[in-house]
Amino acid sequence: MMHLNDDRLFPSDPTERGIARALYAGIRDLPLVSPHGHTEPRWYAENANFPDPARLLIVPDHYIFRMLFSQGVRLEDLGVPTVDGAPVETDGRTIWRLFAKNYYLFRGTPTRMWLDHTFATLFGLDELLTEANADRFYDHIAALLETDGFRPRALFERFNLEVISTTDGALDDLKWHRMIRDSGWNGRVVPAYRPDAVVDPDFEGFLGNLDKLADISGADTGTWSGYLDAHRQRRAYFKSYGATSSDHGHPSAATANLSSQEAGPLFDKVRTGKADAAERALFRAQMLTEMARMSIDDGLVLQIHPGSFRNHSPAMLRRFGRDKGFDIPQRTDYVGALKPLLDAVGTEPGLSIVLFTLDESTYARELAPLAGVYPSLKLGPPWWFHDSPEGMMRFREMATETAGFYNSVGFNDDTRAFPSIPARHDVARRVDCAFLARLVAEHRLNADEAHEVAKDLAYNLVKSAYRL
Image (tube, one colour):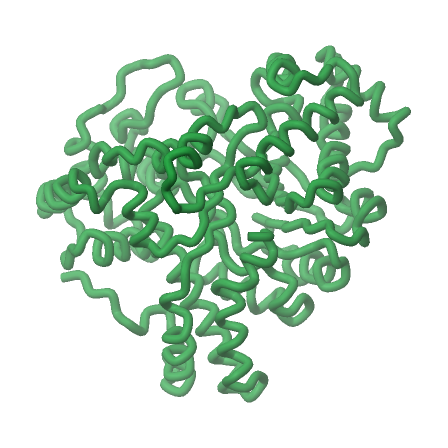
């Protein structure tokens, strides 16, 4: 039997638990704001039924298949497509049975919390998933997915989503966003500008991507000034479809502040494929500063997601492509790395930069002090491997004392797994209430203030920070 306890994630101390309950009651039904994520705009545009439980919940979710792969389950057997089109499992029921057989591997993980929440609250299942009941789960979910109430737009509304942002490449024509807009549906789905493919010289197909950027923007990407103008045009195009942010997934947080006389020749070397590794890294660093300057002009919030050693296994990259679970956190410097950008524009009015980290050791030492003084900086919520109850609590404990609550941006789910969005927000709200309950019980915050902060963390801060 599976039971979602109403007090899950609340303190075990009775006094604090009672305070957390009261705080949570005041925010549990607030609308969800999802300013950064990776759901597909095509889902909302076409509003077609999801194909089957496996392709909805397992095949696109790297949190799931990386754990299973670590225990010897092949990605091919989970239906993950190969780069060369080599055969993989296509039967959803077979994939589901394999997943259910290994569901025990997720004990104690946030993935297990999200999935149990989804099974119980979305699909009405009151059993724990096992190998024995795998087919019952599959048949029940598959039947629901065939109904109109489980199409993407209906779920968007059921989840009480006020707005969701997708993440779209700089070369994307945004046709799905155009279809959503033209459909007359009231759901708010906006793009975010992700230019990695035309900013990172190490990105596969980079030089060809610059040619495509020229074609769709009409700018001359053979010159430094034309290349920057192409970005300005694409950003304006994204804004015309409601974008309020850009997003940058760099290997490090390094920035640079080169003069145009220095940046032009560097771009020429990058453009011709003659730049060495140090020069390519310098170009990425310069482009973060250039994007910050553009943000001052056009108002897009600048998100920086650094510090992931992406596609750590070259063999898996060749076999399955990018974003297949082989991205590993690494040490990240922020104080020195961000200084060139902050020297250039860090105190400029109107600039908003949201910093994320996979290196928790930087919370108290670097990130909170930086965000606690530079008006342009805000701290993003615990990201990726730290999107967990423990990770969220560590973040509040290490960052709040220096940066406070109001130099953070609330919560975003950053997910490809659409059905997990309510579960992820629920975890964040419960953890924040638990943290606030401790402050109230220790007489460090009065109850009225705690209720205000709880609402800010759940709803107000994210709308303000992302200009939504």
